[in-house]
Image (cartoon, rainbow, N blue to C red):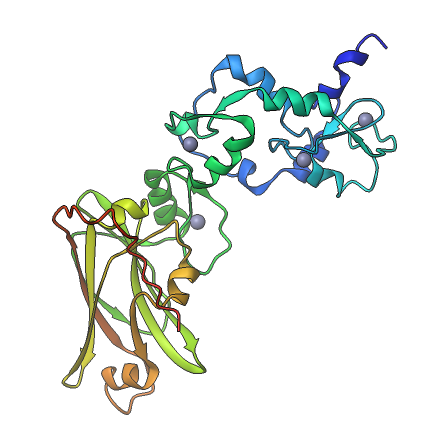
Length: 306
Ligand SMILES: [Zn+2]
Ligand SMILES: [Zn+2]
Ligand SMILES: [Zn+2]
Ligand SMILES: [Zn+2]
C-alpha cells in the first residue's frame, strides 16, 4: 500500500454521503450568516483534524481503523466497532501521529469568518470557542426547539418571517395580553429587545412572568434598563431591571425569576376581579443607562433562585 504512511490522516474521501448526513451535528447543519472562507493555509490541516463522520474537530483520543481511517472518540462509541468508511472492524487503535500534529498547530478561532481575530493552540481553541463573542446566537424564540443560529440581523429576520413575531419600533410599549403567549421584538437605540410573557408554576402556585431579553451579548445588555408595569382595579406592580442577553436561555431567565412576576390571583384581579379570563395590560419602557465606570466590576445577573 503506497499510501500507508499518510493513511491515518485520511479525510472523508469515500465516505458514503448518507453517513455524513446522518451524523451531521446540529450546529454544522444550521445556517450561519455571513460566512466567508477560512484562510487556505490552515484549511488543509484543519480538514485532516475534522472527523469525517460528524465533521467536528477531533481531540485526543483520535481513533483509526486498521486501514487508517480516522474518527473522533464520540463517533467511535456510536459505530458499533465498524469503521464507517471501509466497514471493517474498528478495533482500538489510536492515531498518535495525528494527535501530535494537532498539538503543534495553532488555529484561528472557528468564528474567524464572523470576525474573531484570535489564534489558539489547537487544544485550547475549543475552550475559547464555547465563549467566543463572535459565536452565532441561538434563535431566542421561546418554547420551541428551533435550532437556527446566526447573527442578530439574521435572527431578527428569522423571528419575523418564520415565527411571525410582531416587530415594533420605539422604546415604550403597551400591550394587552389575553391568554396566548405572545412574543414581540422591539427595535430601539438601534438594538433589538424581545419581550417574553409566560405562565409557569412557582412553588406549586401558578404565576405569570414578563421579562425582556437583549439581542446581543451580556456586556452590551448592561447598557440598558427596562421597566414593566401591570395593574388594574387601583393596584399596580412595577418591575425595573436589566435586560438579559439572549445568550442566556429563555428558561434560565425564567428560572432565576429575573422579571415581573404576577401571582395568578393578582393577575385575575388586574383582569377585572371576578372574571376568569386573563386580561392583563402590560406597559413598559426601555432606556439607555449612562456609561458607568463600575459596570465592569460585577456581573449584572442576580442570583434570585429561591
Ligand atoms: Zn466524529
Ligand atoms: Zn476504515
Ligand atoms: Zn473566537
Ligand atoms: Zn427560530
